[in-house]
Length: 339
Image 1 (tube, rainbow, N blue to C red):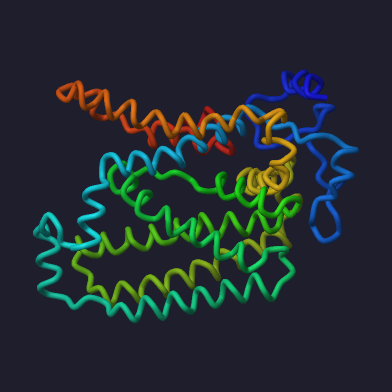
Image 2 (tube, helix red, strand yellow):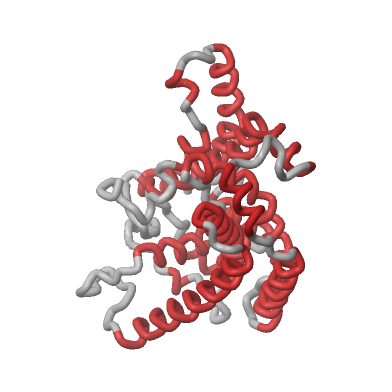
């Protein structure tokens, strides 16, 4: 079976946002999905392994390396500053913008953020408990812990380079082993483990802009809540309208180009990562990709050592391993034309 799958893999598209079966046709998910949207393992074994195009494999391998490299890089280059900042947030002094801001405006009370956190957590618990999502509460808590653990390293990387490492793949992998054969739970774990962190960083970016533009902290707090609520309601409303009023929406043949490439990628990922035991475990077709975790661990140390030896080399000093790995991270759904 391994060699058969390898032979078929040679004849798949290199760049594609779809997955395939072992007859080189698009993978027909309806053949393996139960009525409750879980995966029927016996039907999956009788049908076909999920055959993944190179574009997916490239994205997966580089992301495996990036999620490890960002912690190593952050520890090597910023570890001392992080420790100092936890003891004193004004460590190394405040710039002119911060001094003016603190002099003229009162900061938001911490209690406001705590109340907002409690409300958001309550809504999250209500969502995973009240609906049949196959997503237990303990998995929800683990997803949030992943988001919080990545907040500082990701924030540092984005502040310096305007790049970020997506947590979507690593959260899917973790959930695939914790809750196998449950695509809906896998999707929710990814959203709570990744989007929570992204939304937090977006709000943090707003606060940084408010500091430079001298917008009062209390005002920006309410603006952020208002904008988030409006954006959420409007976007979901438009999406629902499109689903009921646009013919052929999210199909490859849609006349006006509403093919939903990104949505298809997310859906395919929820299926793939519900089956990691049968795709990425030892002896499986895509197991060699897991070596990129080790590559992401080792490479930052090598580059750091080289930069210490050749301190005056400006080219070497600008090498950033997390950025190197996350550069092609949006393939798919992006194509080489986008790049």
